[in-house]
Length: 339
Image (cartoon, rainbow, N blue to C red; front, side, top):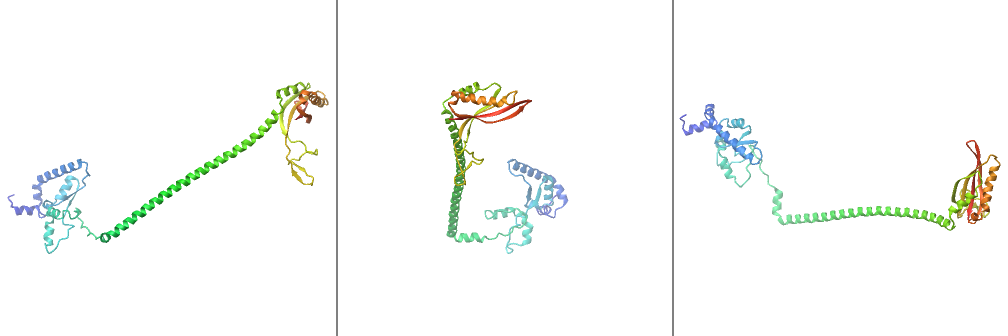
């Protein structure tokens, strides 16, 4: 367009026209392609995704450059003023000149601020940092701070030790509770064994009494069977311990008490006597002869010397009549007292 350098700079600035934009379109297309390739390479290295682009330098003064790149790249494009968070001394430069040329001072501001503080890309003005008075006090009293830290570590160590001891005591308490529960279970088992032992002793006592008779029960059953009259049948034959009558001939009441010499009642403990019970049924067409058949059976047992050598007496305990079907029968129970 046959323009000199100064006129070109004016056209590139804020006073540029749309004609310049159209003439420079191919250059901006090439620039956007280079930016896109740079972003793709950056993201392909496994880094974060680029979400925003900041423009600075003299090219950022080009009219609608940010809008054009934002439409082409599909990313947020922001004009960045590198002096937005920097306070300038008005004695050294005029504010309006600094504001006009601030976009071209990105490299200068970066080199000037290098290793002094972090550069904030935000367009908002950063709030001034407040001095940390606590940190200053700690720096002034280093020995006091070191002593406080040491005390804190000592207290922390004591707390850890106490916590570990408390945990150990709690574990020991749980162990004692478990042992106590197991001991209670063992004591309960011992009590059950004692009860079983007492019951076994009772059974052994009965067995000793029976074995002391020194005779075969099969032989006794044979002797009983040979003395059974005709039309008499046995239903049960068993041995049971019974309490004998008292010395005065009177029977104990249902509570096991008997009258004492003073008139009051006292508890008596009489040893049981082993008795052989013989239960059976007698049948006869003549009602009166059934009792005679039972008495004959008892007399036959008494006359049998082989049978009576192990018994003191044989007697009828009870008898009663009963009807089975349409036949009258007599049920009876005979007691044979062992020696």
